[in-house]
Length: 189
Image 1: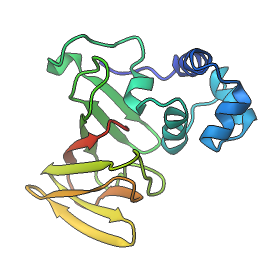
Image 2: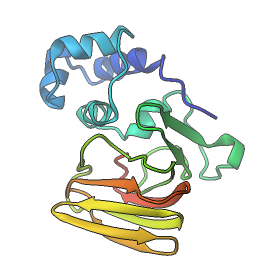
Image 3: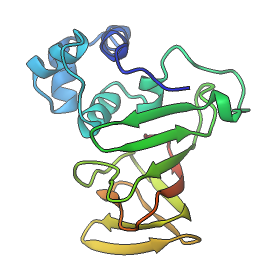
């Protein structure tokens, strides 16, 4: 199932109020402007993926939890037709949540679909806290991983494991769709 973005502003406002935060306090926590967050909450703008991640972090929830609000499950069984899928048109990328959205968990599993030339984010991003980890297995295609000051070439059958506090970005450098399976601990996407 696709996650619709139009509900986003309502969810951000609801989560912010549940935490007892003012719009100003959330803006400071996210390092985003008060005016921008106001526009998000009022449905006047759709934030970029990097801004959305900052908002989720400011609300102490994962990106998928923010986008899938109201679709929580009580089981870890997720059938193909029931996956939460987030499509980011500006980046031409789709993320599928494979792990359940059933409450507090220690890891999150997602499948990323990257068309040729597409990338996962505008600029390399860090996520998580403490001993945050990310493991990615390339199911098909070829990607370049920008990881800190390194550039790693990954192809089908290759995996990589790193601290997700290091800013990173995946870019499809091949001529076919790249599909990656990613496990994150703690859930931070």
